[in-house]
Amino acid sequence: MKQLLISMLVLTSTSAAAPGDIGPQPGILDTAGASDSSLGRDLMFGRTPTEHCSNQVLRGGVQMPHRPELDKLWDNKKAWATPEMAHAVTASAAEMAWLMPQADPLIIGDISHRYGGVLSGHKSHRGGVDADIGIYSVGGKQPDRGGFETVTPQTMDYEANWLFWRSLLETGLVDRILLDQKLIDAMREWTVREGELSEAEALAVFPVRGTPRIWAMTGVFQHAINHHHHIHLRVLCGDKIENIN
Image (tube, rainbow, N blue to C red; front, side, top):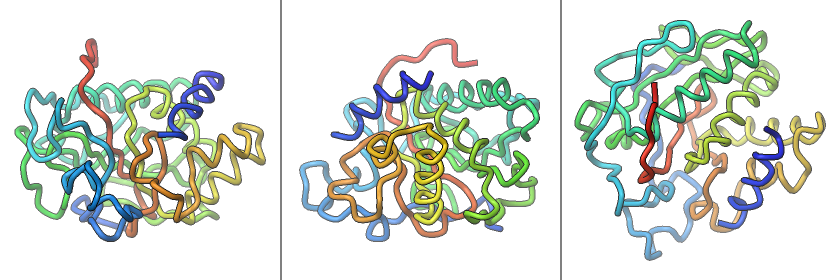
């Protein structure tokens, strides 16, 4: 498993809030230069390939399955996703439950409406490629259904979060994961200290703020304000994913 992730790192390195948290905002993310690039304004946040899907509408979406033993959905009406998103989250939640059965089920916030489009309280979450997911605090605890809860480097469960985030990365479907930079830096240091990753590998996944062209990379954690209580997962899309349940 670790060897698979390390192989992926080589490739990618080169290339309490309410459920309605506003999510990523152009101009606030570390996307310097993206607006002037050939990627276009729609791709300032990540590299969702528009030739395969849209980050503004959802076509052929699937509703996240009800699996209370693995995860909990805030709102079924806002739990519509691309097949890639559904596969990444369901597969990773299942692996997390197997690796750390004592941890709480994941709390999954907003993804998209059934057909996408504007989702109140968000600037993204329009095409089924974005999902808000709770961060584990000490003891493998996820927030309750009342809202996401602030996590600090002192209260974050490093092992639980690493197991889940590593599972997400190993799907090969992660565009990027938005998170507060203090938590990114703390996790980078932990993975090196615990021997999970080398310094170079850790920097490839958990870059320092201001890393050149970070917006053009995939499979990375990227700083965003107001993301100290949940991660914002964006997935790539376009490949046919089967047997997602």
